[in-house]
Length: 197
Image 1 (tube, helix red, strand yellow):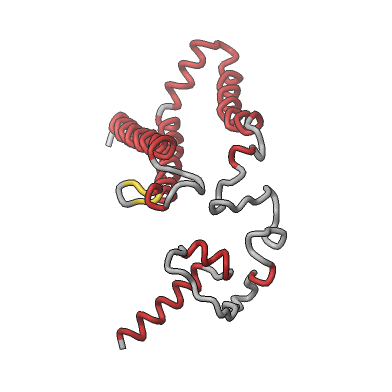
Image 2 (cartoon, helix red, strand yellow):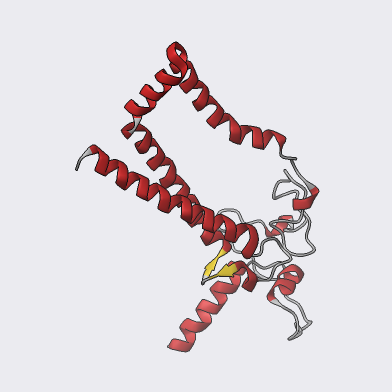
């Protein structure tokens, strides 16, 4: 393949990647619900969960970065020539400044974005559970200290005499009896195995 054919292929893949990145960014920003108040059903689009769309967004972004590097390598002689034409003897300084600015922009967004914003305080927790930022698992009030697993040690659910109401959801029961969803999966799996025998 000629150099121009490679450039065409790389540019086509760049266009496909940036279109996918923009589309998924639009989905995550405006279509798919986020946060603890949204129901599980609202966090799906076309059969994929919000986090799955986020993973695709990440992979497309990584591919885009790789393709941009390849594009710059293939176009280096043109970039160098154009920089020499525009900036004369300071062309190398202009290119270094361009690289510096492109690296600095994400850093500047991070610097000027408010840290530990109250708008996001409840994100990542279930409705009604608020955790403080930078709090360790042991300090959290969501999971009691005696429920933290070490060395895959299994802790049994406490024996209770009261029966759970049919109106209570798994989330409410999990808060009440401090069991994990993995424990529920294990019990259901063992019941399914017993029923298959």
